[in-house]
Image (cartoon, rainbow, N blue to C red; front, side, top):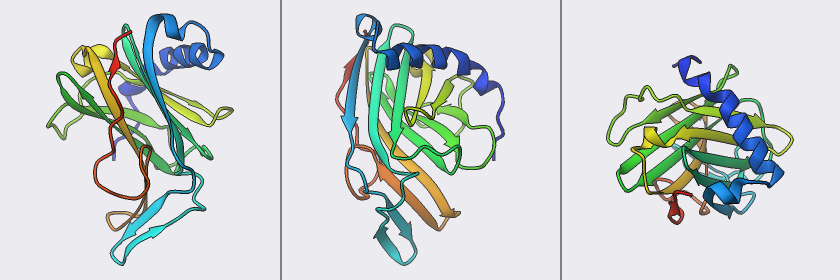
Length: 195
């Protein structure tokens, strides 16, 4: 299990970017974006005994995913029905014209959340300094990934899974931001061009 460390250094820039986005000013002039509202009450639990719906699980229920592709960063934003301080992971799949990255915001244990970026085909995280901001008032988490960490892409497509291990390695709760049920890797949205 990794502890919080140097990858948390970008937290302040993410907060500034979020403030601009939530205020609704300036973002459109500098970035292209895409948003998708997910159906509420569609969390599933997968265990050795099968798959079961968990509609009452508000803490792992993603209701919004947004991607903002700006000049220097890609902002990955998740809105949850109820945002807790811990007890979940946000697992983004980020496909670009240069490959598919994985970006993980880990708040599954009660400590300081951290972000890791995995390059295409690699199970070891990169040294990329991605930042994150948890906005309790809006029930959102935003992760700010420098474009250079994603190969400087012309476009990105993103998918998001929310995950929580009820019993590690056996029972897990999941919600895909772009579809109901469990069907494999996170479904990707449309291309978002660099703004």
